[in-house]
Length: 170
Image 1 (cartoon, rainbow, N blue to C red):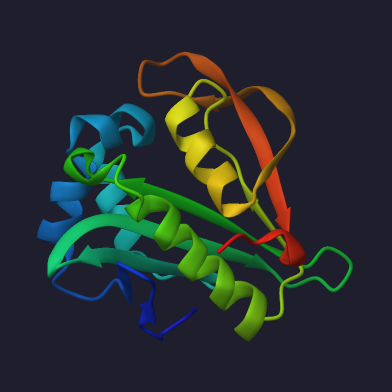
Image 2 (image 1 turned 135 degrees about the horizontal axis):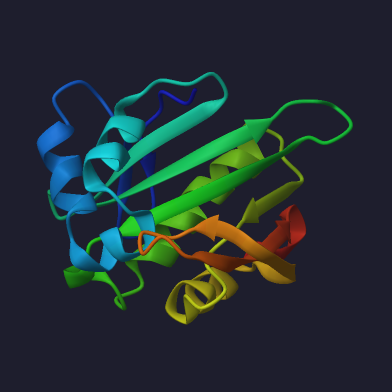
């Protein structure tokens, strides 16, 4: 678990803390977030839960809670890597803040935590997210068929993307 506040070019990532439920509810009830994350109540509960090897942050911009980002770390020496997942409220999408948050967390995971490889796995039809991840340096690895049960109750494909430490773009 990462307890540090991480500072990007335009955003700050601060660990989720007790009392963040209302901010997280505002993030996860945004229609553009719920479209991908599903039940906002479950998403808020999951975001508040402390799990070994996971780190969860509120993304802040100009004092506003604009999103949520998390990292999971695989520490088995044969498979060590970290994965990232992010949600950003719709008023702040398309402004470069998502890539800034991802880049900020990626730098930390690479430089402070020693990861040589990061993964992210958006829905294959989430083109906006895929373009944002590519801006940071992630590359498509392969299609994971019927990977995730969407909020609609239908299975949809996921796109596995990864990035090696040397591919991180500033």
